[in-house]
Length: 389
Image 1: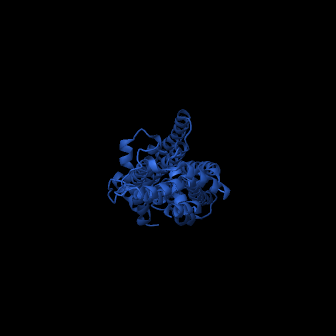
Image 2: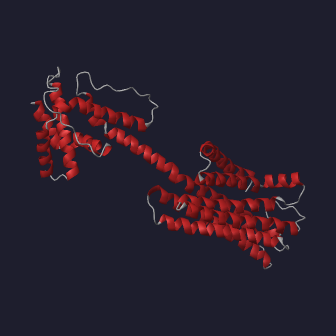
Image 3: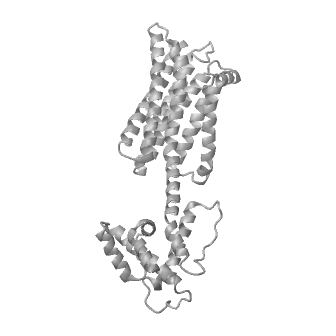
């Protein structure tokens, strides 16, 4: 892998981080958000400092041969800890327990980082190795222990993530489950990275040469694992948001038949505040619901409770359940009231009798049922025809 293979994922992490920073600035006390920012920062740092050009530059700037090796290993270890902390905060639970478990992971991996630095200081690495440091120094005192320790720490984190995410995925549904399964796949690649690295190192310990596993096979596995895991963290958030947005627009469209029916309930129509084309779907739904309720007020004197009871009985006789039959009855009352109001342009009926109020106790759900009944119910179509005659 060349430098570009490392810098492209690092740039992707930087872009993701840029989108998260404004939210962190406004809600920096949120532990989940802090965990996400820490993970993105460390992931980008790992890719940046693991690139061979960066390794050479850091060694040259510091004047310490192979100092990039412990730097990258410490970043990988910190990234492993950030993944575990993010998972703890993402899953949630009692705040005190969440903080306690997070502190334990942070403390444990901080100790590993300290030991890595100490081992590098005790060892000797006189020959600069940009791509095969692990296998070249596998038998060097202290440095071999450093390599084994960082691989073990990374492997433990990857294994724990696989177990936690898989168990959690069996308890949830929807986009969260899909995201967790993707994370599991990503960390399986990380485990494969650890396996290939450790195989090459152990081969060196036993006098064999499997360096190609460490130099050419392991890096692509690490990059792929990191990118797939990052997708797993992003998919539930993005896709759930898109799904919610789609459902909001679907609600807006489903309310259309009822809204159009009510809009023509008066000669002048029901007044509606114009909305800009860029207005949020949620605001459009709220306005449409408000317009419908305003229309119900206009139609109040024309609602016929007896007609609604008859429509209810016909719907039940046709096999409709309680909620559907009630929606059919209310839709029939709306359809008949609209035609009665059109036949009374001067509004002489208004105020003559007690107004009937539609019982939309379930709010938007009832409005959706009424709108669907207006569009599809044969009972409502029959009431329309009878009211027209």
